Image (tube, rainbow, N blue to C red; front, side):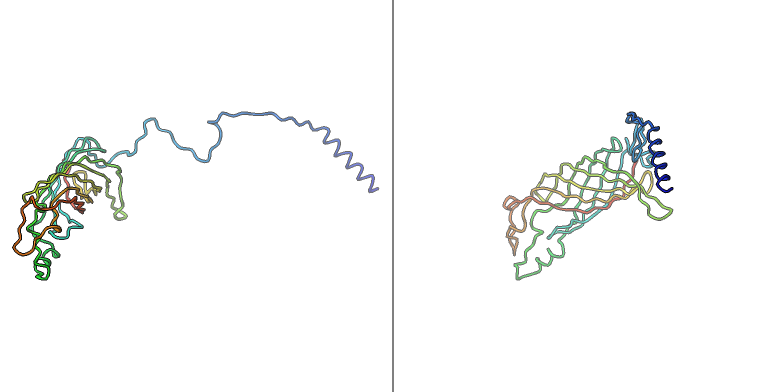
Length: 241
C-alpha cells in the first residue's frame, strides 16, 4: 500500500508541472518612474536664503573700533580704526578705513631703552607707523544665524577682504596691501559687532638693523628696509544705514 501511495503522489506532481505554462515577458519603465533612495524637491528659482533678516543691498555702513597688533615687538600694540563702506548687494561691497597706531613703545621696547647693557637701544628714533589708509573689496561668503540661548537667535555673516594700503611712518611713506577675514554678529537690522583678523603687508625701515643706541639718531634714508607682515585683531561697532 505504501508503494501505491508514493506512486500516486509522483503522478500527481508530474501532472501539476505539466499543467503550468510559464512565460517570461520583459517590461520596461521610464527612469523617472523608478524608485530612488531619496527624492529631492525641484524649485524653479532656487534661493540660498529665504526671508533674509538683515539686507545689505545698496546700503552704507560706518564703524568705529580698535584692536591689537599681535606680533609687534618694539611699539605699542594698540590700534584704532574708523571705516565706511557701501554694499552693492548682499555678497560684495567696498570699504575705506583709517588706522591710527597708539604712540609709545611696547613693554619690551621700553625695557631695551632702559637697559644700559644693551646700549639703551631706543626704537622710538626709527620711523614706525603713525596712521594709515586702506581701501578694500569685501566679499561675503556666508550668511546664517547662531543660537545664543534657547530663546535668542543672532544673525551673522562671514566675509573676506583685500586691497591697497598707505602708511605714514614718521617721515617715511609706505605703500602695500592688506588681506583679512571677518565676521559680523548682527544685533539688529541696522547694527552689528564686527570681528576681523587681518595682515598688513608693506615695506619699511628696519629698526632692528640700525644703530639706535646712545646719542645715535640716523636719518630716515640711512635705514635698511624690509617687508613687514603685521597681523592685527580688531573689534568694531558697525551701523548700517
